Image 1 (cartoon, rainbow, N blue to C red):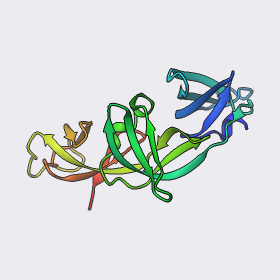
Image 2 (cartoon, helix red, strand yellow; image 1 turned 60 degrees about the vertical axis):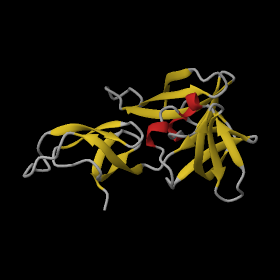
Image 3 (cartoon, helix red, strand yellow; image 1 turned 120 degrees about the vertical axis):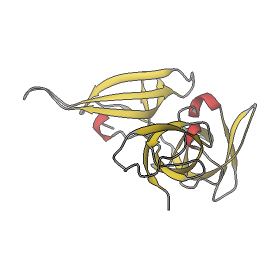
Length: 188
């Protein structure tokens, strides 16, 4: 598999390590002869260490066979986070450290979560791009504030803090981009 074919949520093998990609930044060449660079940020699945490296688009990386299964979040305890396969009802436990970037976006009943499983082991999870969350704490809404006006911090039901327009108030449901952590719109 070539580096330019990798996507967020893919697992690849490099130097004997299985790496789960959490973020990809594409850097275009600055000169005609330059090549596009793909800066990968991820995590070593076995050691949970952060992994960061840039690849040229045609660089070859090892493929890891894994399956994407639809799952539902069940609960969190001292063992980690438990997810249930939506089709065969198998339960999978994953350590919190492995999904620490995704945890602030997981709410009860969230649909569209996929588990990445290899050899019966849950390697990581993939969230839907958009999640709906409730504002639990923010300064009062300002009447007459326009959508393009200033923003204010709002705390959501999971403890995640995002910048939202001034006119939003506590109790409102909003859409958040789970990849960037940014406010998108009110949820209807």
